Length: 411
Image 1 (cartoon, rainbow, N blue to C red):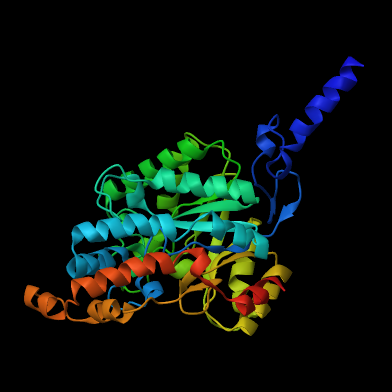
Image 2: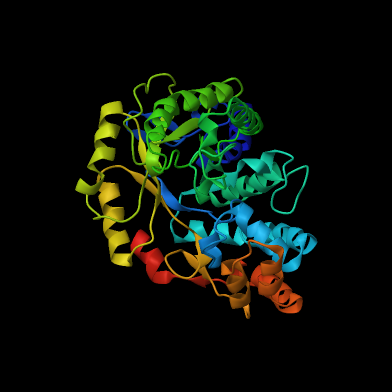
């Protein structure tokens, strides 16, 4: 009778493990790799289906309607010129509070996502000036919140260092100075390792996190003969990051992206140095067929490790539906880019507030001298109100759900 009583007490507690697995079997609490497949804690296979929370913790100009001000640093400088540094700092802090909230995460679960990729800037884990703070950055607070929201919704989370120290890409997407100095700077490489070790130590026991993506889209193809030299260093720089993480965390998968927009996997020659790595590719445009991604499939088959499409999108609904089927047929999970922005081709859209065109016009104006800044600057009242109105417009309750887009992915 006593044993029966204990069963009825403990059985509901075991059930709480549910989505994340049983707490008494630590090795089975995390998503794991089995050949070319991902396995959930309960043993079921996982085909990643989701989106990217781009623009939230790594602003990109085009999602605001900007062209010239196309990176976080350029956007911040432009806003400081338009409305002053103090107003801009306050804007960024409220932007982080409003742009992504638990409502967004619950919506993504409802429509059919099982995974979210979270791009972030390395500066969120330093005391460098970034998004309204000049010290004591709030990276852990922001990601902790997403982890809690994902746990409540039953979603997995991939942490993606979209902007690495020194710059890993050499273009606007890494908020760099136009060159992938990560591959030439020992100081930047050490900082990259230190940040990942700090992140891994914080989340080592968190099964909501599927894995760590060391950095996004390394080595743009713009640097002539240096490209091949950088490509030759890519695997070693990845190994540095893996080694730093493994000093504190042996639980999580580590994701490695190919060179030149996560499309070139020829630089990889050693996929046995760690038993929890997988690869991630990106694809924009082209035909939505298996032939179009044959090189990704071939590399996946050669390594016998999972391949995941970390970014894809910006196309017609018909194209996306066809590519989703192609990826499912070939066991390639996906997170479409992006979740939210102004305009179409996203899960939800932001309606530009009144007078947003004045902000856009200033962003496109020549601002190379102080005189040009003064001549192009919109009125303070108009610009500040437009930014305040944007903070309200970006909230999920005020967004437009692109139903046809969503249906194309989850039909």
